[in-house]
Amino acid sequence: MTGVLYVGEMRDKNVGPHPKPQFEVHFLKNALPAVMKMLRPSGLTALVHPLTDDDLADHTSLALWTGEALVLDHSVLDPPGMNQGIARFGKSDV
Image (cartoon, rainbow, N blue to C red):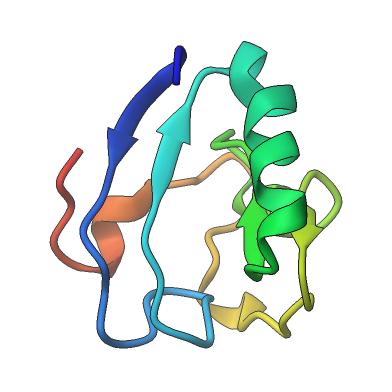
């Protein structure tokens, strides 16, 4: 798929605010329609969100869900303007 930048490894435990094992896919904003078109009929639970300097907004008001929306642990998210990125939760392949 055009616009995909990174596909991470499957995590076998909860990472950051995410309550279930997961993996990451990073893609350009212009790929969002194609990504959502692929995810919606898959039946997968997926949180799709941007990576901005507002970690809480990324995971709430700016987020899109497919499948069952899960309750996230917002207590581990950085305050607005202080987003340290995904590496703070452990190994990062980015």
